[in-house]
Image 1 (tube, rainbow, N blue to C red):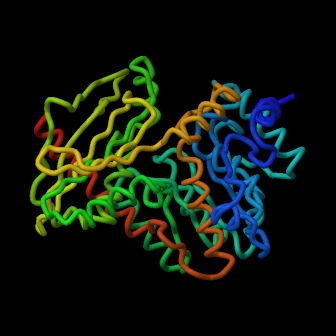
Image 2 (image 1 turned 90 degrees about the horizontal axis):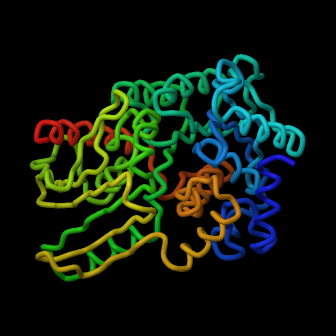
Length: 389
């Protein structure tokens, strides 16, 4: 019995039958209804699987298996199917591959070159390491991708992202990005509260925590070598771009909290383990961003006025925290944040897939243009942080 089989068996013992895998699917409501569309399922090609229970590509693939509107056809995994066949995590990948091939008819490949031209339409979901994303992106276009879902931040440089945008525009291929917090309820609740507070001197703080231990930081820094701003806090920078018009060309001030922020080096990789800063643009808008690799498994959106907290929204809330606890008990190996953000990931993919089926724009989902602005902002903030630290 493979890992995924063992896991799903345990999940079924502690959760309703309809709530398969670790995805915490809602049993009713708008999201569940959107996932049961009567339109033909959209073929999806996942590029970049990685290690089961640890990698974003793997989690996307597991969710797609339970989405009636999607049909997972192919998984691209250049590392474990070639040079990494005996690397750590390879055995778990092989078991996952065997399950999908045997039970779902999913094809696995190490290269786009070994698969036929993609059918129309096909959504290519790129969940690989950031440094590998640009090459995979261009290969997907060459292979005939009609739509692309690109995990954030999409590339390690603005130049790469702009070349990707140019190539997609030339072929008229829509590109959406995996900024799940753009559709997260805790964020919209705080923004709505601030907008309706009746005060013009409030400050919103976006707090993003990861659940790493200090001993995990060397591996974390290496795997996420693009850095905390491009890899973790990029979500909050995207929110700042989307909701507060924070752009690299209109920022007047980046105030760095030097007492809170920590810059460390592990195994030759240097990055911030935690960081806090406040952005001010030329329209007088402010937003504070805080990210901590070892801060726990919660994210917060806090509205304050003159240092006094007025409102706080948190994810997971108590109900979701209980679901996450059940999910982790069923599968102790899984990254907790997959479970915390599960519904948001489902919402993003569902909206993109529905947009393909109905030939409309994906409501509320960040585009490549927004992603480029967020990455430009990350570069600017990093310069200020390094200069002041």
